[in-house]
Image 1: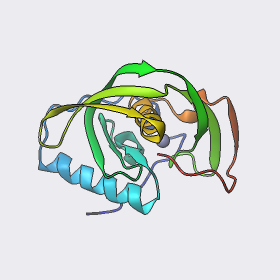
Image 2: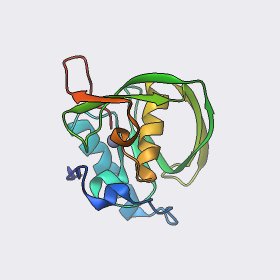
Image 3: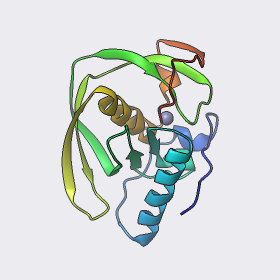
Image 4: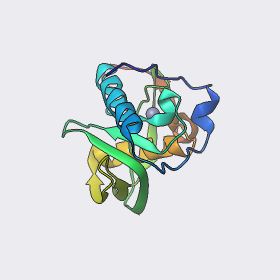
Length: 158
Ligand code: ZN
C-alpha cells in the first residue's frame, strides 16, 4: 500500500463531476487500499477519489466504526437538518459550519460488487454527504455558512 498525495483546493480535479465506476478490478481495489491508508495517515474520517487526483465515484469513510468503502454511492433519502463544524483534508487549516441532513440513506457498491443500502446519522451521515459532495465537484467551503482558521475543538473531516 502507499500514501497518496492529497490535492488541495484550487486543483481543477476537485471541481469536476466524477465519473461512474464501470469495472471493479484489482487496480481499483488497490486504489481503495491506498486511499484508506492515506485517510488514516492524515487523521481524516473520509476521503473521496478526486482528493487523490482520480475523478471517479469512489469514497472511503471511517468515523471510528470501521472502514466503509463506497463505489458509485447515491444518497437516496435525506431527513432533518443539522449544522456542525467541518473541515477537509483538501482545505487544510480551515473549518466552517455546514448545514447537512441529519439522517441519510445511501446506496453503494462494495469492492465485491454487491449493492448495499446504509442508513446513517450523526457524524457518519455528515461524512457521507461531505464525501458525496466531492464527487459532484463541491467543497464544504462552497456551502459553509461561516469559515474560520482551525481552533482546538475542530477536527479534520474528509
Ligand atoms: Zn473533503
